[in-house]
Amino acid sequence: MPATELSIVLVHGAWADGSSWAKVIVPLAADGLKVTAAPLPLTSFADDVAALDRTLERVTGPVVLVGHAYAGAVIAATRSEKVRALVYVAALAPEEGETVADVFYRTEPHPQAPKLAPDSHGLIYLPDDAFSAAFAQNASKEEQVLLAAVQRPISPACITVAVDRPLWKDRPAWFLIAEQDRMIVEETQRFMAGRMKAHINAHPVDHAPLVTAPAVVVDIIREAASAVAAD
Image (cartoon, rainbow, N blue to C red; front, side):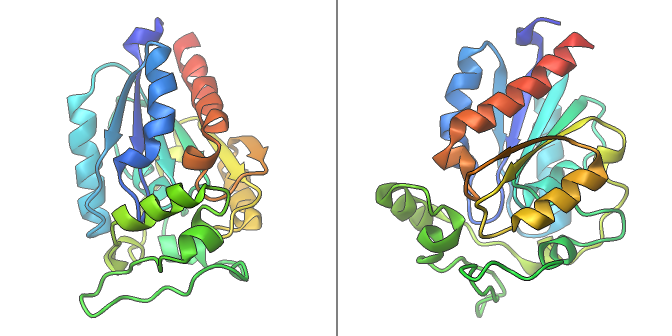
């Protein structure tokens, strides 16, 4: 299968938007792959899955679907027949009947992880200092300022809903484990990747390698894309 027939769909997590994939999009597009960043409203889990499905309707060809952080749950909830492989980038992968919060809090949080709580509008923002302390501690000061400035809040309705049978039970999956992650600790990532029977790539990167170590993210997506193209 030629690379030009493949589509890569990138899905951002909480406190981010599609622009967080900028350093990943350019090299993948240079490979001749069709790349789309799916926008999530982060208003409820159902809203986010519906938004992803709308994006998948727009793309053509077989799809490698990539999720960062919270979006790991979202990419496993689609039922699109276009999806041939899943890639998890420091992502959450609840089992059937679990919520995102269940897996996020299955172990003690990192000492530098922020304490999260809804504001007066029922939305969860990440404190500005959390971007340098935990979300992207390996980013430059300029990148941390930008991430904090453009962050989009997430609703508790995204993380408190039990999921149905996840797609990773029926599609091959790859998992980039972020060994320096202070948001989703390495132990939790290894637990999820192991029960998924995912192809595991582990690197000494922070929670936001799509910003701070894009080459390792690009490499694992290329690996998944090559496997799909060889089928």
